[in-house]
Every structure is written in C-alpha cells, then in structure tokens.
Length: 223
Image (cartoon, rainbow, N blue to C red; front, top):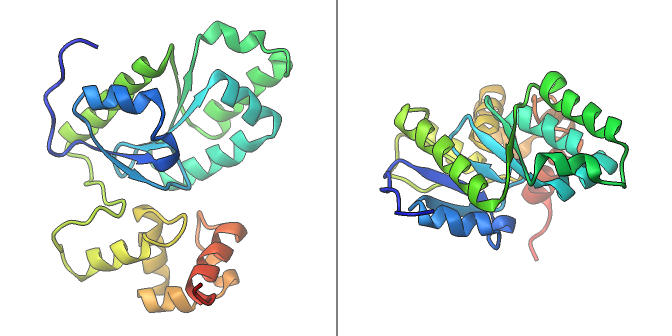
C-alpha cells in the first residue's frame, strides 16, 4: 500500500467485532485509521452517522442470495443509514461463474438492491482495495464535516439529550439514528424501557425480533 496516510483525528471507523480477523482490518491499520470494534447488528463498517457499509465476498454474496438473507440485510441498512453501501469483494466476472445459483437470480438480486432498496454497490478486487475504499469514504465524511459519529463512543458530555441518546443506543440493534426515533416517540428512556414489544414495533426500523430482544434485555432476570 506504500507510505502510510496521515491520521485524521475525526476519522473513526466503527467495525463489527466479527470482522476483526479480516485482512481488511490489517490494511486499514496501514492507513492509520482509528478503528473501533463493536458488535454491530446492522452493517460491517460505519464511516459516519449516515454511512454504513455491508461487506461481502463473492461467495458470501451468492450464499446470501440463496438463503435470501441479503434482502433483509439491505432493508435494515436502508432504515438505519441515510447513505448505506454494499461492497462486494472479488473479481466481478467470477460472480456469474458460480454454479450454485442461476445468473439471472444474481442479476435480479443486484437490480433489487440498487433499484428497490436504493443501495449503491461498490466492487473491489480484494481486501486491500476494500480497505482503501472504506478509508476514503470515512475520510470524505470526516473532512466534509458530516454529523459526528455517536455509535456508543464515550466522549465528553454534550448535555442531557446526548446522554439519553448514548444510553438508549446501548440497547441491542439500536444505533444513534434509532435512539433518536425512540426518544422522539417515547420522550424519555424510562418510557422506552417500560414499553411493550407491540409499542416498540410501532417505531420505524424496529421489527418484532429487534423489539423482543430489547424487551428481553430490559425485563429478563440477570444471570
């Protein structure tokens, strides 16, 4: 990758803990990126409050088409981020050489992702190129003075509202965007914690499974 790029204080990339052994992380470290690991329910990499990235190898992408997981993931990405992206890693031509799924099914999935879910697809040839793409997306967001990343990163208090958002975003599957929606609807964290599964499901971006997980965390006995 050549010489290291100068670090940017504002450049923070939140990475799903399950990506920690990926070669992408090694190459991001060469960029001096400030990588923070966190278990993410949506996206693999978060470059700013509005940009979340799902990364898939060609093999992963094909498998996710076969089990239809890709469509649920893209729906969740679209609800959680204003500018979601999908990176498919591997030689683009090789995707149609997979014998496990018909080429037309692949074309249909790509069409659905870009047209129905409005999520751009970025193709990279390997982990190094993926890392560089993620780095430059994060760099652009930081230099463009986008909204500060608040995915449970402890910082100096910025007031009661910020503290409430920080508290609620600790619930499973809840990022800052969803925490704001919850607080706008319920007005305070206590009301959110006391809400029923049905009440939580009324919030855009919170389905039955996520609502149940939140309810379980708040109400079930510890240990």
